[in-house]
Image (cartoon, rainbow, N blue to C red; front, side):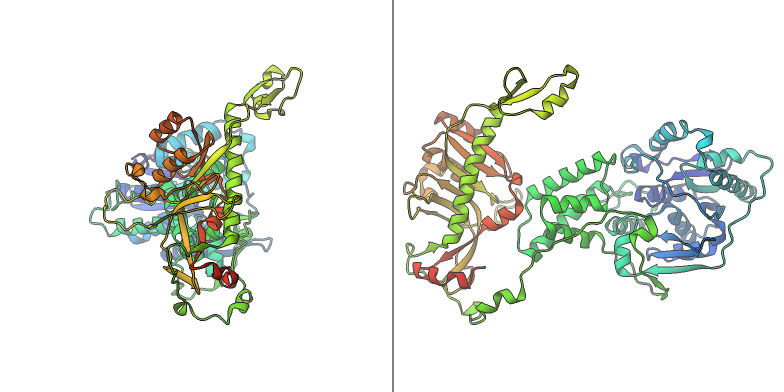
Length: 625
């Protein structure tokens, strides 16, 4: 694994690890370098005047600390100590291994704030630190002009070079942890015979504090989910009989793969979301969110997203409640204990990192007063669902309207998909046709021509619609799993404006929410037009060869459709044999990924209610919200 290969710069007995601060991959590189080199002392690019306080903060890890001092301009200066900073990782490892540790940087005031131009450190996971530093050296260091360097940087490099030279005379091997921008220049300056006399900025008071829980959620450079998993594997390595074995730790590797941690975060958040909101978290939600967040990171020239981007993706691809669950899980940090009772600071992101992006969650809940009118109702256990017979049950009409409107929407969408597929783009000549094709015009900008859209011919009508929320297929390694949606039935339309319907769902009578009113959830359904033609497809022997419930509905849609088109909405495309069968009957299955449908609408459609008699329709509004 490339991330496990040790890379250092060397000058005599001085080994140097070039780092970027506050990054998990960099902290892992420092941890491995210390374990493999086993130096006699460790030098870190931290202010020498704060050495005792910085070592104190490192000794408290994984608890979070903040080293605070005041500049000459009476502005606060903060050093945040967290597990995923390479500098504090070096000090922490030195304390654990009883290796002398020194902070050797020149303490300066008024150091300019600027963003280092570095590749995304996640590349270390795939390429290794050597290739990462090589890219940084080629892109940044070799193109830099001498006049672009700050005088403070030059003074700091000279001071660190002098201190490293002194340490190299005292110890046989020295490990230096320094920023990528400075480390090679520091090593080069060690060849100097004389160094100018440089002085630290005066510090009247330096304090070690900690953070409040709310502040910790906001200001950690690596959001806590990353730090927790880094800490977990690091602790396992520390207790391991062979601390030099970095290929794998249980089922995880060191350093942990950030991309896998992000996937696990979204999955665990999905479980919490389903538990707290009652809405389902489908596989297409996860797939769409991961794709969105990847693209979001790429357009900002990053390989992996930051916390703002991953929350924005969760909010955009699912909803605000899911984004909130993701935020809660991503920012929870149980190691914040403050057992030594340090002063707690309530710092904001702006206090430590300057301007930042903010995200707001508009959570959906139910008003406590909205149910006042139903307080006359008895408790759920007193309700009964007892239909007089199989033909006495009926649906809740407002939900029928929602389903029928959704069916009309899918009819139009299926037709538009085919029109777009059969459409073409051509250069503008005498007519704008169906509008300017902006994408093709930009793509052929060098031709200095406009391109226009020409829609395909109007396709036929849609005769049936199949929507699959959950195929309810047994797991590959389990043939005994109980189906989640065992109730399979067929309903005929009550009038000409209502379609016939076949569906599989959760059993009626399991969740009784009112007298004679049962709450159910669709696994999938078929809508067939015109009504009053559909037999019980679940007992039709012609469909016994179908492998699952989804295929039963799709095959019935193909055979019962009077029109040439069938719209199929699901997480996965229909099987090729089903499309071949449709062609044989002169039909065409139009596939629409369910991820293209609003998750809010999906959650609304999945839930329906069954009444044990038509009389229940008069009171159903009091129990169905």
